Image: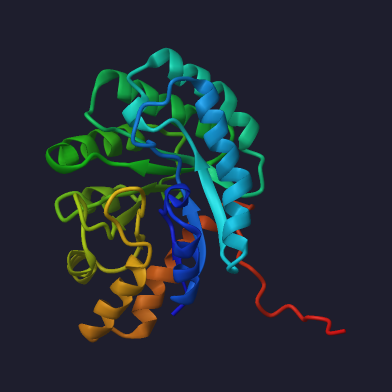
Length: 276
């Protein structure tokens, strides 16, 4: 079954992972900007990272027929440094016209501090100024509910925001309802550590339905699975769910969300080939 992975940090993966994803049906990935495992020393390090997202990764993905899209931001883990945040925000607009940049993300909160919230609001302002989609990171573990509540309340109070243009990611059983209730998209992250696996994700879909819910691998430099979505598909079939429902979650829903950006599109697999 074809699928889109809405959250895959391919800069941390090998080219073999692109091949494995292509072999299991992946037609597109979107790669949110994220924390590199260490705090970057300055704006130049972000520029180097952003350049890889808009230049190198699309080339790697294209070798396997996968469309690569990305999102731009300074990750909330690094938002404590307000001066660095301002300097990075100054360079982001120059990337927003690049053909594979879909929006601002993954912004959000980590420890739910005052500086993180200020950085989050700065990124929202930037998204609104440039009419961009928004991809939101919610905190892990004990800060999950509190951070998600602050994020959802902040977004819902902003009259400039159209909820259906916002993905609130890393939803879990105790946060998905508040995300959906305000009209946002909810992301279920199929990550074996700190997030939800296929079985829990399916439980959530069985309870809340498939509307405005997507799944993603969030594969990165930690223990993670670039083929997590095919594993989810297999588990959905094992539970007896029809392919029409599975396709909605792994293919139709991501397309509905991403198609709100005029830059989103999938490879044309029906184009004719001229043979010599």
